[in-house]
Image (cartoon, rainbow, N blue to C red; front, side, top):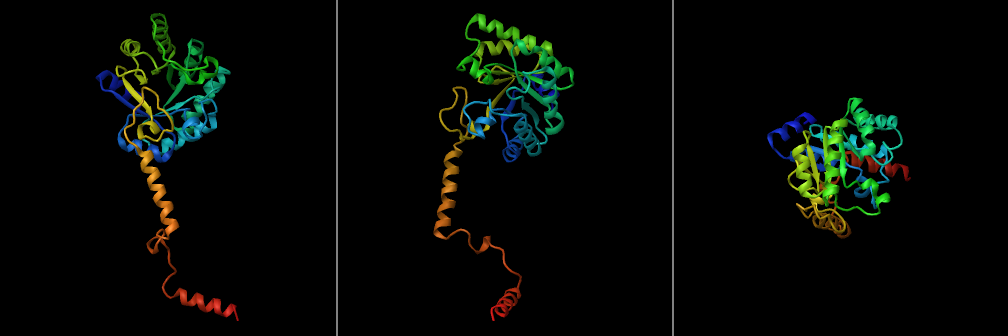
Length: 281
C-alpha cells in the first residue's frame, strides 16, 4: 500500500482506514487486520511513556518505533510523525530528520504539524523527494503556546482560514492532509476541495479516511477518551483478568507444570547423580 493507492481510494470514494500504533507486536496484528495506513505518532510519548503531552518524543525514539512498526507491518502504508523541534529549528534539519524516517525506518510518508509559518518546510521536504502529510487543525505540539487544545474551524472566519491553509499546504507540496479536531462542516469542505487524501482525526465522517489511536480502539486507554474516539473492544478488562490469573497460578503452584518444563536427556540424570556423588566423597 503506497501513497498512490491512497489517492486511488479517494478517487473511488472508498474510505481509508488508518491506525496510530507504535510497536512491532501491535503493528503485526494491525497489518493482519487489513488497515490501509499506520501512523507512528508522537503520541507515543503519552501512550508508551506516560507523559502528559507529545512534546517529550524525540527523533531517536520515533525512528526506532517507526522501524519496529515497519518490520511488523511490511505491506501497510507507513507514516511517521515529525516530533517537536525536529523541523522547527531550520529547514536543513527538517529535511535531514525527515530523511531519517525514510532511509532508516522505511516510512513512506512524514507527517508535519503545520501552520502557514511552515509552508517552506513542507516545500523543502517535498522537494527533497519525500511524501508529506500536513497536519492542520488541532496541533498537539502547540499546547504550551495555546494553553489548551480546542476544536478548530468553529466560526466562519476560522473556518475560512483553515480552508485556505489546506490549499496552501497542497500547493507547497503536501500530498496528504491530517485534519484534527475540526468542525465537521469545515472538514467536509476541505475534503471536497482538496485533491489529496484527507484523513480525519476527530473531524467527522466526510473526510477521505479516519484514524484513531490503537489503545482507544482496543479499550486500553487510561482515563476519559476524546469525544471523537470510540472503543471497539474492552481489552483492558481481559488483560487484567489474564495477568491476574497468571499471578494466582504462580502463587498456587499450578504454573508452571511439567508440560512447561525442559528435561535432561534419558539416562543423563543417573549419570549426573553419579558425578555429583563422586564429588561429594
